[in-house]
Every structure is written in C-alpha cells, then in structure tokens.
Image (cartoon, rainbow, N blue to C red):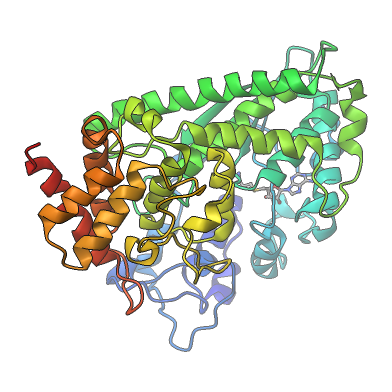
Length: 490
Ligand SMILES: C[S@@+](CC[C@H](N)C(=O)[O-])C[C@H]1O[C@@H](n2cnc3c(N)ncnc32)[C@H](O)[C@@H]1O
C-alpha cells in the first residue's frame, strides 16, 4: 500500500506523518489483542525488528487516527530547525534544553534507518536537501571514553555558545553511580555547574512504581561556572551529606502528602537514590578545585578500568547518605532510628525482596549504607549474584544468638528465634517466655518487636514458594507472634 501511496505524498506535512504509518501498519507489527483500530502494537515496542508470521493489517479507515490533526503544526510555525551534531553549533542561544543519550540505552541510529529506507526515495521538494543517512558516526553513544569525550565536546560547545546568564536544562535518568560520576566530569569539563535539580515523576503505571525501577527523570539546571571556588575532600563529605539530606527530605515530604491523598506515594527507593546523586552533583560541580587539583583537567583524564576515581567515591557516598533516609512504610522515622543498623538492614532488604529485588550487589550497597560489616551472616547459603536472599528464621534456627555477631544482641534476632519456634509448633506461651528471656528490656522494646513482626508478616507474604523456601510459613509465624505479643499480659 505504501508504495502506491507514497507517490501522492507531495505535501510535506503528510510526509512527516508517513513514519507513524510505517510504525503502526507494518509487517513487523504484532497483535495487541484488542479489536478494531487498537488491534496491533507498533514496530518499536521493543528494540528489535520482530519478524511476525501473521502480522495484523490496518484498513485504510483505521489508519486515519494515525494522521496528525492540522493544528499539531501550529506551534512549530515560527521556528527554524537546524539538524546537526551539538558540537557543531554556530549560533548563540540563551537557553538549551537537552535530553542526551547515555549508557547503552537506545540505538537511535538503528531506529532511524528503518524509516530512512522508506523516506529517501522521491521526497517532496522541502526535503530535497536532507541527508538520508543515520549519521552513525556522529551519534554519541555507549558508555566509557567515547561517551564521555562526545558529551564533553557537545556541552562545552553549548556553554561556549551561551551568554554568562544563559541556562541549560539537562534531562537525566540513570541508576548507575558510574554514569552519574561521568556526568559530573562532563559538567565540570564543560565549564558548567548544576544549580538546581528537579525530580519529575514521569511514570504513572503503579506496576513500575516499585523498588527496582525509577519513576522519573532528573532535570538538572546548569549555568556557567563563573567563580573559581576551591575546597577539600573532607569538607565536601559534610556538604554532600547536608545537600542530600535536604533533597531527600523534601521529596519524602512531598511523597507523604501525596500518600495521604491517594494511598500510594510518588517515589521509590531508586528515585531517592537518584535524587541523592543529583544533590551531590550540585555540590561537587560548584567547585573548580578540590584538594588542589584542577577539576577540569581531572575530568578529562581517561578512566582506568576497574579503578574508582575519587569522584566515584563521593558519588557512592552521596547514595549511601540518601539510603540512610529511607524509612520503609509501616515504621515512623523515630521508631526506625531506634533500631540497630543490622535490624534496619534486615527489614529493609525484606522489603526489597518483597518488591522483587534479588541481586547481591544490592545487599552489598545497602550493607555499606547501613554500616553493617558482616551482612553475609544474614544471607541464605543458596544466594548467588543474581538470586540472593536473606535467611528466613527457619534457616537461622538457633545460630547467631550470642557471640560477636552484629545481629546477636538485637530484639530482631530474638523475634526470629520465636518465629522459628512457632514453625516448630512449640506452645505459644513457651515461645513468649523464651522471647522475654532472649530479649533484654523486653517490656521497653515490645512495641517495636510487634512492629517488626507485623512488618515481616506483610513482607513475607505473596512471595513465590519452593520446597526449600517457605516465606508463607515465615509470614504466618510472624503474624502469630504479633498477635500473641499484643494479647500478652505481663
Ligand atoms: C534520549 S534521545 C532524545 C529523545 C527525545 N527527547 C524524544 O523524546 O524523542 C537522545 C538523542 O540525542 C541524539 N544525539 C546523539 N548524538 C548527538 C550529537 N552529537 N548531537 C546532537 N544530538 C545527538 C540521538 O540521535 C537521540 O535522538
């Protein structure tokens, strides 16, 4: 159909719409399950060209919805589009808004090539001077040195072509500390600094709003770094801590307000981590010199594979600081602070497991953040890099009840032992007695133990069970303990 149809596409605005038709009515489209105009998915639902043996086909009538309404063009009626790499800028502009490629997220040049194949033959005169090539070599892509040097060239040029009071807004989303560290080097080397960071929630799907996924994008506001400020690494630690605290607390306040109105909040832990990175960048990039080193020169030095730079360490530190503010729903801040570090770690990771996280590096990062030295003692023997989990009470049995283990003297350890006894069908009255013996200051900490039991009852339910892994039994043991303690007369 397109072959014939293309002959009539002499109006430039219709030509702009053709790619939408190609994306939505092609043999690479799959079925979406609905009927009528919504029956098919589009070509780029994922980053592959999926060959389909029974592709759906839209009728001419159902293609109508794919055409732009004429007023779509109103807003661009008075602008000039220059299509060239950012590093080749020649005009000066007051404002730049960029959404750069980063990491190895999307191969834009490959996507473009699919459309170019259709568009390059007999374009309307308005497109006669277009270069029908995806310009692979010009795209900034990937990670590592190529990414860093390409980004520095682009942002340095934009900073050059901007007055001293000019402003840039850079959209950025990434969960990797290394990429954020690269980003601070890029900003330094371009003579810019972060003056504000806005976290904008972009995902509304609640399935995405879980621990592992970010729900938004950081808008970094950049201005020229006009002052030559110097600082020392030790002082930076304090400053980063303050900035991260302020940023995370303001997001948590917002989250709480929304949670009160809609029962679900705005941010996940991953969002707060990212906000922590952004706050660190704001502090770091304000300085031109750290410990006597010129940061522009430092930023351009190539990375040594496997070696952490001191900027990497500061970014790690920022994230650890952010993590300290993450109080799981169910606990008040004051209650959470009363818990020992190892208890916070165990409960936080139980929460993460409930959200589906299971990579070992996550446990390592949180152990570092919570300052737990031997988190391995709390991990199941069956943990692997991509399938790690905490020990259940039935796996602890009576281990780590005494001695130097971090968890040994804690009320959480006493509670886990009590839960183990419940699964062994020991009489509840006896279990309560043992719990009181195992827990010094039982009466004082009882409300907190009940909270922990309620928390574990909730976080251990609805998880996949196997013969060797029975979180459902753990959940019911925790529930029995919570109720028994609530009804206990002492
Ligand atoms: C994250 S995407 C932007 C997506 C866009 N904001 C949108 O919503 O469709 C990054 C874009 O940067 C472009 N790009 C890559 N290298 C570039 C360079 N050197 N100069 C200008 N743009 C570049 C890529 O082609 C890609 O289109």
